[in-house]
Image 1: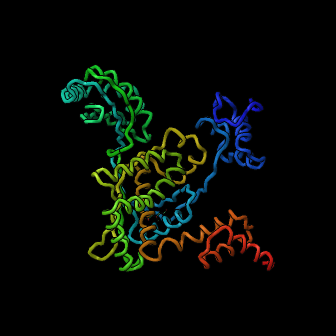
Image 2: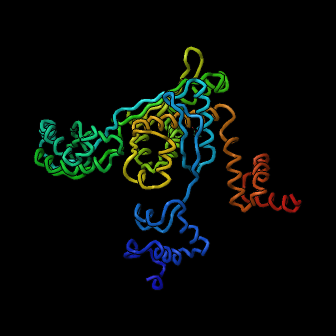
Length: 428
Ligand code: MEV
């Protein structure tokens, strides 16, 4: 099989091969060198057979930097925050902001019960409004059927708790959408909710006389929200002018979707880094956050910054936070398990509150920099280091090459190489 490969991406049975055999095929296709294959194969702390069971068509693993956000005081408890990201300055900015917030007593955070929504789509219904009422009238029966799917969840206080139904008007005609509300406790809940949604589908068909199509969790988790807020003394932020700058940045994001997208991206820099470190589904969190930011019909900011009567800065953030501590990669990936241990969170609710606080910190870190010295100063030294590394500058010259490029404001590979040559020639 390996020998017979021509350069086609049509590879029947690729999934059945071992990671080694897949790599052999890949090597031919992409002309990978021995060294490149060795790098891919080196899965580090994620055993290859575990990786091979996590997703399909595995050939290796990709390590990412794992950093620690410090200085976080949340609901009067100290936390060290595991963060996985490829972006320079994120961990430093979060830690810096957490220190400022600490000077004002730390973050406060709260969350709703961990309720996820499961949608069941019924089409081809003659009288959708009447069908909706029939579904609502059968709520107890539907909830019972849903809860039979997961007795364990019910035994720990979770399970399907409520049911809603709505009629929507679409390009394909009217549809009746039933929405199960499931308390997922410490699970993210996609499996439990999807199983329940599938199980109640025949009942929904009976009740509506229609046909059920989609049965799936919604990532717009408006019933599973986390909130964090803080007050930062104006002196800690850098004085009145910086506070006013942050207020203007907040107003800008509230009014303009182009700015709101970047403002929210800043908050998500922190949240997603922690979500990744713990092996949670970061796409679910991103989707939920941005959909929530548009819920009122116009995309806007997830956080708000104001000034209290004392002139100190106050900020808050609220967003859906569908994260779990059990199930999936959270419980299988060895590094994710360590990340959860570092966090020390005991429930998914506590975890969601920490994430909201991290998002607020990250947002504050970015706005403070933007409203004072600008973002590039902090960013540039790490960026320059990365460029120098990519240009092949040896470890002993990295710092000097990076510093020179920042001073000259010429952060480019060709300049890194020139400087490397110059410094090497000068024997430095
Ligand atoms: C960069 O990753 C994030 C920022 O653009 C966020 C912001 O502008 O608020 C700095």
